[in-house]
Image (cartoon, rainbow, N blue to C red; front, side, top):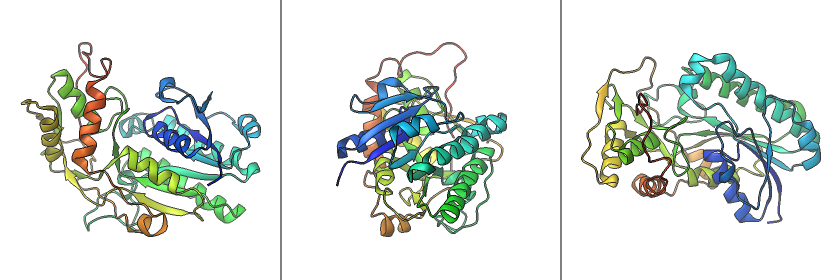
Length: 321
């Protein structure tokens, strides 16, 4: 494969930095666009160039200089709770920001691959793993904003003949996910165990999620390059309950610490799992990392970082969804 000029928005963040690593390993020319609000400069490898920019602002000057052939758009406001508390901010980042990326990409004919969400868009998966054509019933402004982003990509494909792709991620976990920030439950559980703190499970803990390793997500994202448009689920097709997840985390950490149960949170999904057959047939993607192996890799990374596994100040609790 010849090297491709690629812009990765959010490339200093959790998922984005793994995507950058995958592109660099392929020999692509990579530029990261990241505000560093949640991303970290040290996540960007030396082989990639970093442009510190906010996607809510016009990006044409940067893109005109770079002339990208592809844009992997992973910059986002990714916290569901923040979207409920600050829906305008969420919309500015996830809707306006996506529109800014599309407009900056358009003069260069660059394909955009958009990081969307599975659980927050489909709602309850009562009938089994959700297929891409399932009803879309988002329960949070975050899910609605991501759906709006997908619709903008589809509109641009119809209007301009572009081949933009949307990827609906499951619950992504792995190294570089900050247990103190916009964390998923894996990072929160393992972070609490590393600090010897008690984690909380909301409700009975029987709610299920499709946990997919970040390395697999990076592979799916790069596999979408060159695809002729479309929407694809990126997950494992398997669901794990929160209580079972905590037991796995506890065993890997070698801890006897029991979790506390807290009241269920209003509007939380009880069942979320993705059908991945379309991604397998069209992108050649299937998740390869088993949950226990991915948790082990995450634990080894987390327990080796004194900042992430160290003590926090008073009043900082640990919780998980």
